[in-house]
Image (cartoon, rainbow, N blue to C red):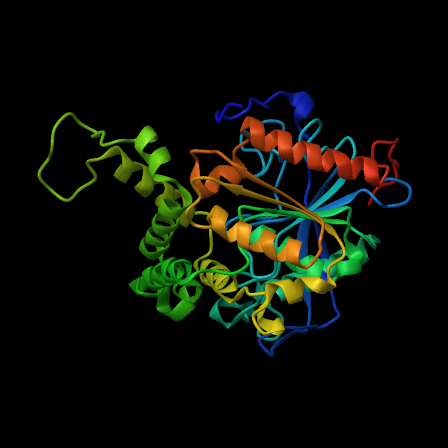
Length: 396
């Protein structure tokens, strides 16, 4: 099968124009860090229709820089689809002809849910750096409360890539009775020292920016643009494979000769600078710090004396685990470690390592074999929960 992206751009395969919704929660949320959010809001989107017995619901969990806008468009003239539009929609792996799909922006995000760039009701000012550190477990707890509000008792599947896959895995351990399947893509059972080191360098890039002001940059009407740019550039390098960068840029120069200076001369430099500048205009620096710490702290085996196999004993769902050959951020070996623990724990698991040149970002790119495996597994879920039957028009 080809490693080239699959074309899926026609309107018939899109969920179309969608509108986000927001739910307010008054029930206090006690966080793992010991602090409590007395109230909070979650912004989310839905695609497809909920069937009569409410059994066809899918939860989509986003990665570090993701948000609730996973598919579709915000207007007819909108040219930018949701971040996982390649996988969500009619005829796509998460087929909205069969499933009711929920995608939210997690607590601490900067897409509309309660986070550093929202108002702290206790002070009347933006939370900023005072927003508490959250964990994947905290996110799953808030997601379970969202499911309660939507009157969804059981997810047909919880699906996510990268940090999203960590949430899917945690769902299977924290609420084993509330999901039938967990789809864990390009993820890991915990970060390596190298991964934590990359995150620390990114954080230092942000906190060392004079415009950071110890996280209170809102009060100074400024943004740590340079730091956030550097953090994104560092991260972006880890998301791409050497093969992909070589094929895309090689050693190409912006001009035909060396300038013998320290400005941007190579095409790869230009690309990283562009990505960094664009990101700094749309993402919040305090959220970036928080998200990287969420990644660092993730370790579902910690409560089981370091035994992932023992931690998995409580799960009751089926698993699909997918890795990508050139992903060196969360390598196939990390997925294989997870799968091995699942097998030893006697859990039903399907595993595929996809040959792809796109590195960690491969989970966002609809290559043929990836789509075939993802679609086949989700199709099996649809049949299992009766989701291929006519759905209920009275969706949430």
